[in-house]
Length: 323
Image 1 (cartoon, rainbow, N blue to C red):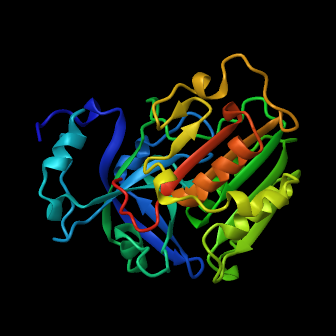
Image 2: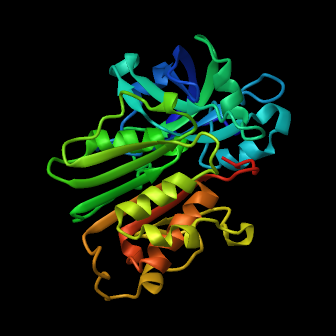
Image 3: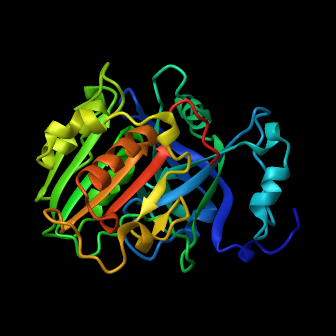
């Protein structure tokens, strides 16, 4: 890579070290990361569902060297041999502790206990220990970074829905909610032991944990959400998403669509939101098949205005995510 000043990048792209590791539950590992570079961490607002990236060591056990990286760092990273470039994955900043050189980023990593569902991040987290090194891509104070999709606008009612991979993001949203807002949060996790005590909903938000146990992924979550919306009878009709229906890059918010369509064209520019959910803002994330089924139920089945929803496929069963 071309050597230039590290300040050429508007984001933090540097090595961090594991300071502490704590197994929260059968499916969650909490990792605290530190490093001198984190003194420059900053978002300019509430964290909510703030995304950042981690690069795990490759098969060789090495980390890629990003020193002197330029704006073309991603292309340069892809040019590194696969066994040496490592594995890049996206996570939520669960918490920020300390300040200055003592700043720490806390991240909760899902272990994906199901057969064939684990990946490099889960494998690394299962054996992580203090002193292990990673590379982070994180917000730099005073620079635009993005990565926050929770934008409820003037909504008067919230609907937060996610599987275990969305629990850290929903936890952050709940923590940073303004006073007075009402709604519900539904979280489906593998087993009841994964109900995390430090996920706290403010007054006015109903927090519902669902243990999947041996049920199909998202089945109970889907039914609970439709029951909450008063349409439980439609559950079976909208649950399963066929493989060819699932957008591998599913990511749709009130202002962005992964399909490339303009949101105004999808929703109908100038049209008023469809009643009876005019004041609703829905934020839904997790496995892409589950999210696709709920997207169809809310937008096509209940005719909720597309400008009131955010649907994000954090992962897809049986498919290795790119970053």
